[in-house]
Length: 343
Image (cartoon, one colour):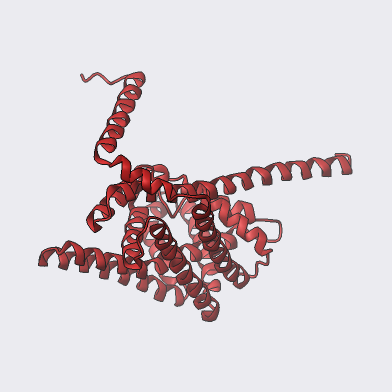
């Protein structure tokens, strides 16, 4: 019988591993060059990064407003912005870079005039547009990365199949959504077939929820004008993110949009398959790999990661702060209502 390591031993091993990684980075990095790149990180460069960060969230909030209006949910764009920012803050702390904060986003926006079903339907369409519109930029970076790697014909063919598969999948889902969502119901019934045989009443309740949710999604995308407007804003959002990467590269003395697209592809690809909360370590590893492949140096990679982390952490702090302030305000208002009504 194998003896399990105790928790203190595991903690010591983790500390030793982190220490070893720090030693490796110290050996690999060039102190003088690293110091020079760190000197480029000034207050003005961070403020420029924050301009891009706010622009990203403003465009994203505008996209969500379009979908909310189509769902007949009229909320102040100000609340939409802060609700989205709070959801994105929680998403940044989850393993995936794209999912996890949706319940928080819905809870922050929800009031007595709307249902959670309609709010989640707008979020579902919003997330689909986010993934779909990131694909062209990621494809550009992927193609550039493949050209730089100069792979064999077999690897190039496999990579092409991978890209075509995902593009066909997104396009197929979009076509099915425009057809009214019957495809989603059919797939849901197929998946729930074992539950239908085992617990038919529970299956009926689940299918009813899926049907109502599908109807809400179908209503949102019923207007092609609103959907294409939201899609255009999603493309604009990806372009702003791409130029944010280009801006951070320019801070480090690299003026290349294609290089920014390749690095952006790495981050997008990582966000889909990441399993580490906050992408801690994994994001830096991807940046290090791509920078090394582009010949940009590991020193620039580390400073680039630091700058991106600063922007991410500032927005996370604002989002979490908004959640705390909102909870305190709601409790205060409830207390005031009880005092006023004498309850």
